[in-house]
Length: 85
Length: 190
Image (cartoon, rainbow over all chains, first blue to last red):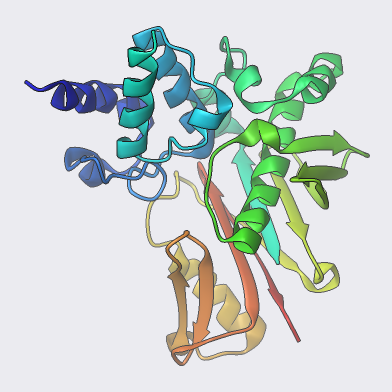
């Protein structure tokens, strides 16, 4: 399993408690938008960011959090933070 | 332009934990965290500030045509139980909040404050899809338009626009839903 596939899998686990659109969740891909597709409410988006911090033991600054509205951007932020650990 | 946000209190109690480590720091600046610490109703204060940010953020996205997610760069001040001021990029926006036992509803507007109408709809169960039909029903009555000719279409940025007979109308529309509450605000420009 490539790193990216594993990351998407992990991310899927993380967002699972907050999603409100099961179909979009089942078909999750890099293009999936947290709000428009998964219908995660914006307060829970903060939980997603905190869960990601806990899982990878990374700190996500506000500039990075700013971008984390979809799977692709979130993966990029996680990879970047992991690389600079 | 207008923006609004509703917070379903029961739903929030169940689905969000504002006391979670790191949560306040991700959303609120030092001044706002002081307001929360000093408040006798911290839960309500947290979610009122949140809804103010969300409402103004929506208006802001409409004005700059760009989406982002950075709630702590949006700064709130409270003037009274209802009124507040939210600053984004050096610009102040006035907000009005209604806090009751069931929900907190905040709204903001530019240029059209006198003419904005707000509607809060209570569903018995959490709102899923197709709540547009409810909004269309209401607008049809309020504006005296034929229901079948009304369309609500979202732009790429997720901003709802109102169409009548396939023609985009000069009506600002803002829609918010959370838990079992749906609220929409609209203002006609002339």
